[in-house]
Amino acid sequence: MSLNLTELVPRPGVGKVGKPVRVRTNFFEVSQFGTQNIHHYDVTIDPPSAPPVLYRRIWNAFETSHSQGVLKGIKPIFDGRKNVFSPKALPLGEENAMQFETEIQEQGSKRSGGTFKIRMKKVGEVNMQELQLFLNGQSASIMVLDVLISSLTTQLYTTVGRSFYIPDNKHPLPNGAEVWQGFYQSARPTAGKMMINIDTSATAFYESGRLPEIVVKILGRRTLDDLRRGIPQRDLVKLTKILKTLRIQVIHRGEKKLKYKITKLTPASADQTTFKNDSGVEMTVADYFSKQYNQRLNFPFLPCVVVKKDIFLPMEVCEVLPGQRVMSKLNEKQTAEMIKFTCQKPHVRANKVQQGMSLLKYRENPYMQQFGVSVKNEMSVINARVLPIPKLSYHATSKEAVFAPQGGAWNIVGKKVAQGATLGSWAVVNFVGS
Image 1 (cartoon, rainbow, N blue to C red):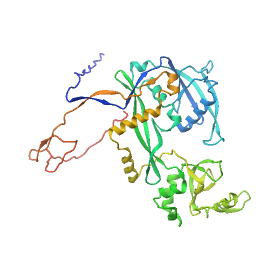
Image 2 (cartoon, rainbow, N blue to C red):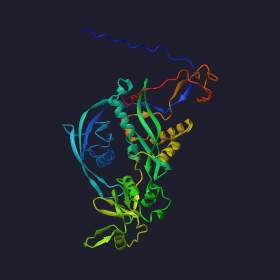
Image 3 (cartoon, rainbow, N blue to C red):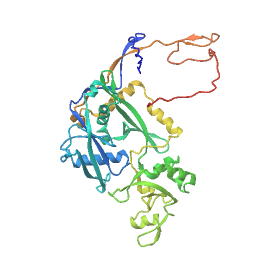
Image 4 (tube, rainbow, N blue to C red):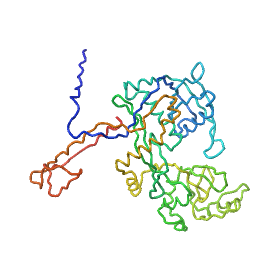
């Protein structure tokens, strides 16, 4: 059986209509690739199904503790899940596989955060010369480059996917949230060149600081005095939904600022929530803090946060830690403020992209140095054309039926459509990611 293949129609030429111009793009050229093969390892970290942020902490601890051991000064890169790429072969024995144990410390504390097992096994090598040939836009070498350019930012900044965020120019949003400026980076193959695409990004985080003040903002109150009569049940349900799983630190034990994750709120206030102490005596949380820490609560009318199984903490001894992203849908007021923050003129956006490039510090990146990869600091400049404004045609009986819009807008007063119709049914097909 013969197979007839249809020949693809070649491009007839380059367009010439319009005014030729030169424009800057938010793409930065990769000027140098390493010539050595990259060694690819499969990594399994216990516990399974943990979030990438924990896996990265474990890997960073492993890299620090074994920098002069099995790594011998080599700077491998980790994608946060299963893949490690190394510019040199790691000494993992005859079977190219080995298991390690590493310990992490709780953030901001010297206490142990646990001991974890890391199993590594070599699965192959990646030829970085693939990048220069551009044989396959989904090649493993492009994956290596994506992991490489993000290797340092995941250690220095709060990251979400391929974007990283900095709190320096944060902007407040209604109801206890704030928007952080961020930057997106991705390796992109283009005609004859490999580029790094850098763009601005923004996302919402919860405000950090004293929990009572944040509760006031979340509930849309003016001051804490508005809550002295208690929090209505409806608001308490809303508050619990937002605060649940937020990370906090306690401030009533001096320098020993232990960190916890909120599991829920107590239904009653701190001066009405009771428990049994070590002696079996039942007492309220407010009384306990007064006797144990000589601290009279300023806001005993607020509920307590519950951490772990049955530890009750008054809100005023809790601080919300920074860098916790808002995962729920923003409300209308928050969305409006977010749009104001992200709406930028082209030259402002270009300057911010250049600022992001400066933060990335590709030239000083020790991982990129070992992999032999360099990126130009200047935006790529390409040829473009400003096309003539197309004319619009309305019904012949309309006032000024045929015209060219000015500034991308026009007035429809006195205009009739050429042919009216009723749209009985319609559909939308989204091909993004296909």
